[in-house]
Image (cartoon, rainbow, N blue to C red; front, top):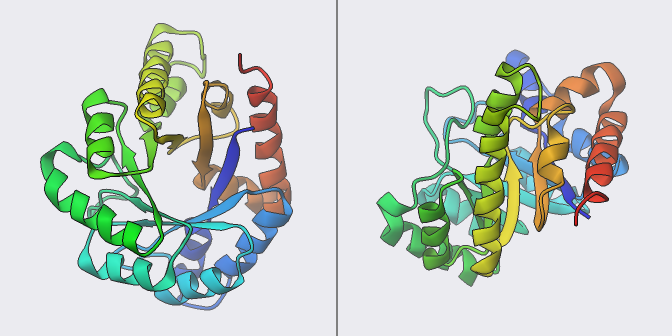
Length: 251
């Protein structure tokens, strides 16, 4: 069964719009858990645009399901992760001017430094994931630096799905999905876990969830958006239902 990690960053985005205390991301994490989430994901950005240090500390203390900390591979973030020890730390690229993460981490271009970061996290008992594009050379580099998990960037697939009439059977969508599938196969052959995420929503998630060997999907914006109308618990429950249906179709 493919697991669901719920990213609650944008609950904090709403709070930070007023620089106040509500809505509380920790409350959102509890509601996501009650809706069936298998894990909680937060991205502590260097500019602290949404999630704050105090949020991560409270989530580490109060969350009863696994915590995945998305982070840039900086000394500051590595030190914080080693202190708080989330179940998983996911290394992502980060740009100050981007609205959201716009592409995968280029491991090939910074292999030596990232290997040191992964080693520090592993010494603290933290499983390290890397967020990468669906490219075999990046998968192979992830294995060389010691990453235990690869999360494949599903943004190009989601964009193709949306721009081609939300039709999973058009060639452009099939081509993007095939890149994810082949990358996932390589990840598993190299002994790592195959996760995926970014821009997945209620209409495009099932073809990805049905891929062989996929371990976790990390989804945030779509769930938080749906939660505005139906509540976090129900929004997570519906996403879990879609994933469960797709998982049942796996060979």
